[in-house]
Amino acid sequence: MSTTLFSPFTLRKLTLANRIVVSPMCQYSAVDGCATDWHIVHWGQLLQSSAGMYTIEATAVSAIGRITYGCLGLYDDACARALSKRLAIARANAPAMPVAIQLAHAGRKGSSHVPWEGGQLIPLTEGGWTPVAPSAIPQLATESPPAALDEAGLAQIKGDFVAAARRAVRIGIDALELHCAHGYLLHEFLSPISNQRKDAYGGSFENRIRFPLEVFAAVRDAWPKDKPMGVRISATDWIDGGWTIDDSIALVQRLKNAGCDWIDASSGGISPAQKIPLGPGYQVPLARAIRRATSIPTMTVGLITDAKQAEAIVASGDADLVAMARAMLWDPRWPWHAAATLGAQVHAPSQYWRAPPREAANVIAHAKVGMR
Image (tube, rainbow, N blue to C red; front, top):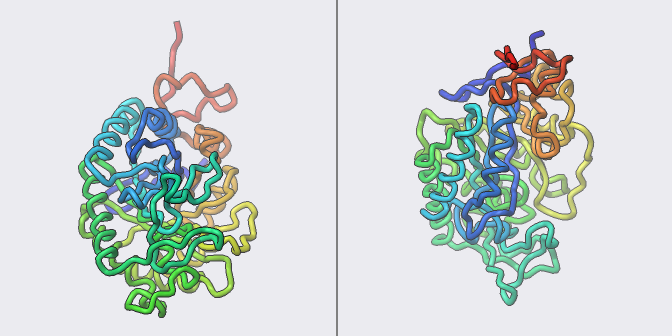
């Protein structure tokens, strides 16, 4: 049985075995930005999932660019060594799979408690730090305002993204995604809800997209030409007066012209006033609109849990890739089960070749196994 979901897809010189991407998922389990043994276990099980590509969680380009004190970083040599060491262990014990990393800066959402401790802003008096943002506008009215970035601050952040990208090259990362979504720093520049600057980086649409495009161009220049680089965007703020899908299409065309290889189309995160129409595949129309208007490869995300649902999305051309997060945490073998449902095959560790039940015996390629 031929399926689109289990057909290969190529980004520059990188070929994914199928259209399933493991989405970046924050683990809040780093120490001073450094990966820990938790990451070996987390990465290891998902690298054995037989997805087409695995994406390391939002990885901060500076210490104050972390969302929480537990967020992963790639902002100094210690972070790079910790990530390199643990990723090498995880990759050595899993079938070959491309690994991407999402580089990020939390902006005004930085200095927060981890989710299981409430997720609220940590005050300076309790060990937090002062977050930075385009404008001194807090995420919540009850929070202290962030510090508005000046020109020197903008230059520093751009340099931080470039330095982190170069560390990712040295570690052997295969693809890079720039986080420009979910109310974090680069999204904060895009949205008129959070960006009320009066200089060249605020006001008009062209001014608000200026800094994210500058960061993209600088990172693309530092990233190897044969390696793909994409961008995750919030395609709409889901709020009146905010960023819209039309804005996204205009931005994406500029990103494409600048060398962007894919758009990961998410949404929301800029304001608690957002009104999101949650439902299965609720963000698919955003990816579809961007793909049809710009012809750029797109990933779609959000409440995609069923194999036939995912197949229909890519087979119809609504998106090129399906990125999955919570569904993969719940079921790290989701691609195996999807392949069984769709009559496809995956490559899996030889130690697990005897795992499929009789009715799914052919799901693992080359699984001819004898037993004494």
